[in-house]
Amino acid sequence: GRVSLQLRRAFAVLAAAASRGLQRWYERVVSRSRYGSLPVRVWTLLATRLLRSTMEEYYESETDFGRQLGAFAPNRKFEASASGEAAERAGGPTLARLVRELKQRHGVRYVYAWHALHGYWRGVAASLGAAEGLEVQQVFARPSAHLQRVEPQVRWDAMTLFGTGLLLSRPQLDAFFARLHAPLAAAGVDGVKVDVQSGLASLGGGVGGGPSLAARYVGALEASVATTFGPHLIHCMCHSTENLYRYTHGSLLRASDDFYPSRPASHTMHIVNVGYNSLLLGELGVPDWDMFTSLNEAASLHAAARAISGGPVYVSDAPGQHDVALLRKLVLPDGATLRAAAAGRPTRDCLFADVTSDGVSALKLWNYNGNHNGECNGECNGAGTARLPPNAVVGAFNVQGARWDFETHGPVAAAQPPQPVSALVRPHDADCLRPHGGRFAVWSHLGSRLEVLPSGSAAAQVTLQHREWEVLTIAPVLAQGRVEWAPLGLVEMINAGGAVVATTLTRAPADDHDAEARLTSRAAGRFLAYCTPRPASVWREGGELGLPFSYDDATGLLAMQIDEATASKPAELLVHW
Image (cartoon, rainbow, N blue to C red; front, side):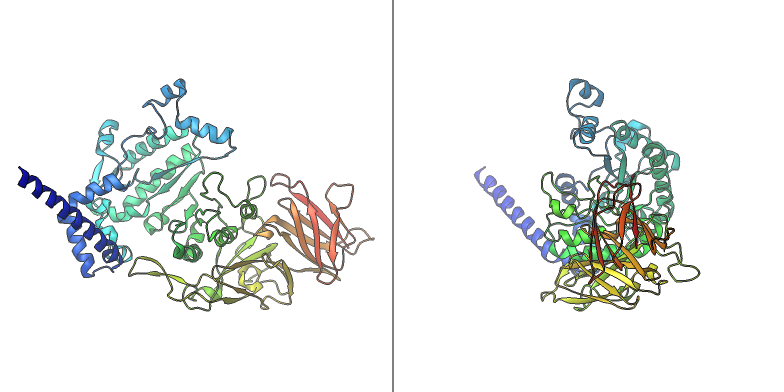
């Protein structure tokens, strides 16, 4: 007995040591090896054969990736009782109570819930299918060689090793999504963020192919959302074209990998990825550049990018842990944002530059402001009569120093600290300003500096340290006789020009004035404009008294304070010369 006990202890010690050694080998060698290498081939053999049961235990106990959807009702994280109605009567916690408290006590307007396209990470459990009369079929992923090259781990993830519970017919999927969404809507949830979408492409083998399977799932999902939640849908992890080309209802598309707050090398790569991905995604929907945390070391870099992205701005701060000053540069007092009118995307001179690794190039992203009905209207190339937006915005970012590495399958930092880079920002970097042949007023947000450039090919220069940025608002200068006019916006906001809904400069209808500018401001705050000469007066539409203003004769900078403007009641101003 004593010998047997000692042997068991010895074997346990050896097994633990072997496990630790195997884990270190995986972390230091396998996870950093490229597709097809000997370490990856050996680990694939171990994971799919000898260690299969161990992998299953790991996925079940240490992660959510091995789990399947087991019920449609809210689980014990939200409701103390299996019956939400009973818990509500008893005064216990329920999902409905949580949503109600968020809205009534904290003023949250919309509450979304997350779910995977096929229910949960590994789809639907067979037990749920049997209980609900749904025909669940376990399907095993067959990741392509290209996908394995980008991420070899898909060869031994839970979907590949243990299968995914799928529903294969459209009627079954319609029933599935109706039952999935009904409890959420009943609890007051307003919409859904639907994740794990691109994984469907690798599950199509033997069931009609990836494109057909994605079409069935996306069609049923969007039909259910349209009925249950209206427009409130975010598509996430959806860059497979099997998914992208099927969207007809949901227009908000996550443009990136996750935001990783504790991975320093990921922050600049995140900005690069969302910018270049928006070249395609911006033609299919509204790119969503993902959340960030406002106290992160790279928070201002992320904030500047979100401000000109043309997409939503949201943070995943813990309650009470906020950089309020930074957030106020993004969000108006009423909770709205100065969203640019299109998808932010790289300028022409950045399209084929290595902005992460060449040591000299800044990333420049451009957008434009104005009404969100497409003010450029297809005329950005200068053909025909151009309708200029009130202004454009160009952001310059030093994102050197980290790049994607196929060896380690993630962003890696450069061996040497990144050096400063200089960027030349031209008005014609914004395609929508190319038809304008006149002068431009340029406001630098961080530099608080006004420049007037003689043409669209002239440049303002900015020099940026690593992770530094600058956002420039560029307004075409309108001329009427001796008068020049270019409103710049609410300059305390990063996207200052987003406050300018529309502007005109015309000959004054009254004989006692030379010219009249009309301006619609989306919000209240400190408003700047370039003009020359000094205005005679500034009036609020319908006001009986002139609006106080200051004017710098040397620069032509006009400053005024706008009060009480909102999206539902914008400020209408008249400027007279």
